[in-house]
Length: 434
Image (cartoon, rainbow, N blue to C red; front, top):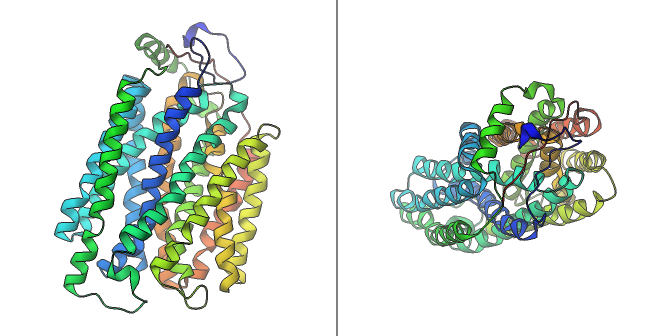
């Protein structure tokens, strides 16, 4: 119980037996699925751009709606987790995601861009709930000193899903559409637009089946969770504490916000950038096959980061990776050409550990405030909506110069790693019941 435990050096949750391998393996499947579905947006951006004759700014509304969903739904999700616990929140989140994926059927039949955006908002509402519940669950389910390594490990499964999604989307969406298989400049007829819009139906119906199955499995599993009495006592403890006392969280919120501008801007414009004649000179479907290298690098980097953080503090690894990512973006901006294609593919390796490491550094020492802190950090994922600004830069200047925005954000990551992540106060830990 939060109020009965002595103040410790970390936020740690304990449960009878102290074994969490099974719980972590179950959670890893959720990280895989939301990584997979999130990165499908990188396929939807160029796909819907062609179907609805959008410019870059308009096509980035896909990401704007997606990430504004985090801003709108994060705090309500945190309150739901406090009220019903981690396990029920995971089941609810999966079912909400399934409902949103089902919404792609009427959207594609109507050939309606607003209907696609509405369905995406429902999907991200479910993912937000999963993020608010699963990220702190993984971070606090064991010793705090290994939390960055633990979250990087399960986030590697998130990146595995992210790496698989472009292949899935390129083959089943772009590869089955006229816009995805024709060279730039082809004007779609109305019949081709209808056929292209409907190419999303089969992939998203498959996702509905998988998500409902996962919800059913998790609903029947026995996982450690906060009991009702523990949640009540934690709420009483929260009234005497303040998030403003934790500078690592206060500076961590903008760090997540700016990191999401980087990740989403680079991922969303990757296909449009590398298919240009002076870079890769290829079709959108061909360019989509290079996207797994970006997300695959994130997977490799998270496994690597989880290993490094067994010996090196997370903030030092974050500083080194931030500096390398900045240098790769400098190659894109200053040099461009074919070499910039390889720089963009490699940048995933160095973006890999940023989100999970910032998250664990941000909630370190929060104790009973962990759920609220998690809600704020997940709300900051709304920074992905500001990647719309990179689309505006691409429209008004050039795709190459638009990467100045993520490059500037990398510098804040470096500062947070070196100074902003320092813990200023430690609260008492919470407990889990079996």
